[in-house]
Structures are given as structure tokens and as C-alpha cells.
Length: 267
Image (cartoon, rainbow, N blue to C red):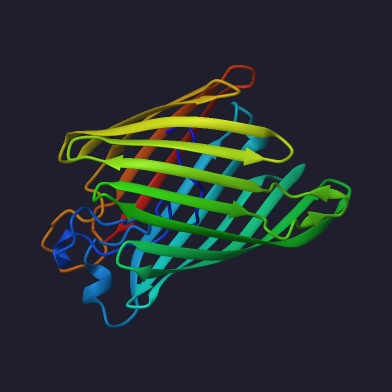
């Protein structure tokens, strides 16, 4: 999607909000990967989503990384645990975080998160800091989702170096045959960037995605194989036996191509 999202831990929409199954007027906000009606049916804790991603930036073996994420849901909301690493022994960045999300109203949800960030390089002692994030998502007019996120609110630093901070805004139009998303990101150090992406189903088991970003101009494309969250499968709300596999590539005008793959188990 070329970055057309707000980067919340649980996805662009932060948490699962009630959908049309409970009598509301449009699709639910299901960024946490839960089935649209799972929050209203579940009385205990349930594992809603397990996601493992890997990728390589700009064709550089030294810039390979992974991200593992799990989301547990209940009637009160959801908790997402994330661990990841970029780089290796020469230079490495590691992160571990938790994000808590909760519906505030039928069509409004909020998320807060904490990230433990570590930075190390050959011959340099590892340094660590803590960053605080927050986000909010809402559904308006039935099929429109709007969301906002703020990263590193307390302006955490590692040594004398600032940790990336900023704000992101997103709007998404969720139609039956296609989803459109646009996002605007503001970083005090890097300036602003706008991205526009879309997703369309080819069949019950295949989706295609594409997106563009401006300043710098970046293009992204990918496919998703497998049933997504909220599609009836007769398994009674357990994690799907078959995962969803997503593959994506992006192209940067100066740095070249990057590739990514994700395997997701969701309810």
C-alpha cells in the first residue's frame, strides 16, 4: 500500500469495533484482525491474531529484519505484543512493545502503546530507551474509517540521537469490491509525506494491492493469499488452520527495491 496507513500496533484501525452484525449501519473497524462480531461474543481472553513478517530493505543483506506480533482480545478491548529486529551484528535495531486498545463508543476506539527500543553496533555499547505512542480510530458514515496516531510523544532519545517521532492521519473507504486508503505523515526531522493505496479481491482467496507515495515518489504492489478476518469459515471463531500469506515489493527512486512477506493467522 506504499505506506497508506497510520502505523498503529494493531493495524490502521487500532481495534475491532462492532459491525453490522449488531445492527449498526456499516462494516466494523477490524484493524486488530478480530472477526467483526468477536468483541461482542467473547467473555474471556481469545487469541485474535498472530503475525510474522520478514523483509529486506533496498536489496541489502545488512538491512534484513523481522517482526512478530500477537493480539489477544476480550470484551474490554485488545492487547498487542510486538517484537522485532532490523540489521545484525554490524548494526542492529531491536524493539519490543505492547499496545492496549479499547472501544470507547460503538464507532470509536483508542490505543496506547509503549516500545522498548535498543540500538547497537560493532564496537559500540548497546543503548536503550522507551517510547510512548497513542492513536484513535473512528467509523463515520458507515463505510469510512478515519484514524490518527502519534509516535514517540515524549520525544525519547538514544544518547544524543532523537528517536523518530511524528503524527499520521488516515482515511479509508471500505466498499464491497475495493478498499481505498490515503494517509498523511508528518515527521519533524524528515518533513511530510502523502500516500494513496488500494486493495481489491480477485477471488475468495486472492487480493491485489498497490499504492504510491509522494516526496519521495515510492511505488508499492503486492498480493494476499488466503481468507481474511471476518470471512465465514465454520470454525467457530478459532484461529484459522490455513494462514493468510501476503507478499509485497516497494521501489524507492534513489535506494531501489525492498521486499516483504507476512504470514498471519487470524480469527
